[in-house]
Amino acid sequence: MTIIISLVISFVACALLGHYLIPALRRLKAGQSIKEIGPTWHMSKQGTPTMGGLMFIGGICIATVIAGWPSMMKGEFTHLLVLAFALVFGIIGFIDDYEKVKHHHNTGLTAPQKFLLQLAASVVFVILLRTSGFLTPNLYIPFFNVELLLPWPVYMIFAAFVMVGTVNAVNITDGVDGLATGVTLPVAVFYIAVSIWYGYTQLGVFAAALAGGLAAFLLYNFHPAKVFMGDTGSLFLGGAVCGMAFALNIPLVIPIIGLIYVAEVLSDIIQVAYFKLTHGKRIFRMAPLHHHLEMGGWSEVKLFFVFTLLTAALCALAFLGVMDRMSL
Image (cartoon, rainbow, N blue to C red):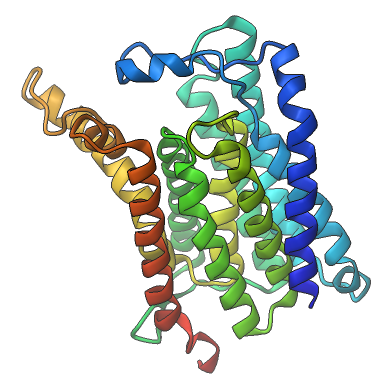
């Protein structure tokens, strides 16, 4: 019941915040700057309000605190740790968005600045999870129901790499109306199911808030988008996705439920590497993957539904792979 309450509160709060936030962003001229190297047909989106992620972040915060209050009274704060971790990334994204809007271009923080901030947040989060007893260096292998024991220094390096990589992969996925929102929604539902199955109600509260906020955000972000989440939203979502995986101690599930994220970031890396090695040749029509498919004739709506449904199927498969985790 608590989880349902969290989902409903988040949905309603996000929907209401969107009603007021979008006009406010327009008044502030917080419009998205479209990269000239991107698809030419995306130029029509120039000026669409960005930083819309603030609305689902607000809804998620409200729902997590209200619905999670009973757990907090019992001294259970893991859901707040995950929320705080995602918020740190959201703040990094907000600073990046603010710089873009302020200077009216598509470049905010430099890559090294973002990397160092994200790395610091990841290391602190892993340490907090370890001290709270939720995280061990036992790396769970989905489907095989076995654990691989790693030395803590190795695990820390692994965790930081996965977290920073996941956050940036989600950020890259946010390039088509509703895409990052739609892909992350079944991931949130997956985390609800796993949290309930494992008996981690407080984590289920956060996952439900995430699902409710994203569902409401789609009211404004589905094609044609009235608002973009910006780096504020996409970095927050990346933090939430990897934060939940580590809090549940199943980080290796990320490549399964987040296959779309992985494909998007790999297509970008492969394109850049191949371009440099061949002095100008390309593998994809345009990177990342969603632009390649767009240039092949896929509409934004088709991309949304195919990628979202594929992620939903992968999440169902992943649940089968981790359902015996607590038997160890």
